[in-house]
Length: 308
Image (cartoon, rainbow, N blue to C red; front, side, top):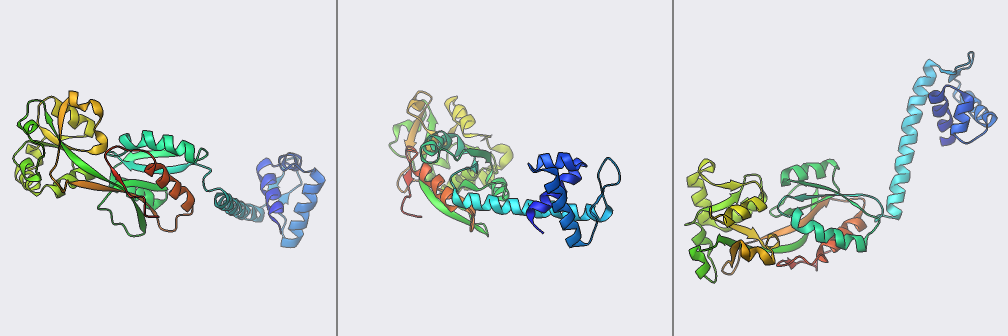
């Protein structure tokens, strides 16, 4: 029994005709017929009823053909695995990113990746950390870019960069007179935060205990939240309150909208990591994603390039 013979019987079952099946398999009809007859003799079963113009699969043959399809699918999967091993940098890479990183990292990451791995296009998914984590565990994503803390069984992380936070305030706000802002001072202000579920919200509250305490007192119903960083930026610019932004979300022209003030040292920050399944089958591709991120020239971050 060979894979070729299995392909022949699957083709005949689908075409219900020996001639069309032979054409589909790029062989002559006698070659196909002889091979199937040989397989039937080996199995001791008649796989096809040849008594009419339309070739019908026997009851026993239907079960054999079904199993043959499974065997051929597994054989194709082995070839795919071998091809991936030979060229890990060819083929789609499925990458997930959290909402507060994707808009600022992706444009530069894609430019870098085009140079480093032109045959590895990205299939992208922007979502919350918990959603991306579940997709990664299920194999629907190859890797995800998220912020710490991130501890998940069965997943490995590669540190990418540390990103400091800055305070942004409306024009004319008293903080404009300060060179630096302390986390304690935030607790006395109306601070606009991302909605629950965004890990950056947790990063900010973890870094500013006074602000976190005030948020607990106010409760969600009495606090002002934004669904995205861009929404919060515009609310601050309108004078609704102040907020905290990651360095990558700030541009040279932002001074026209609001004022940017650094924190006192040590400034609150977040660590961004690349997470994947342990023993991921394309380690070279994963390292290439890391290299593309490290060469993306993100402003205001400290890259961690000494960890393989």
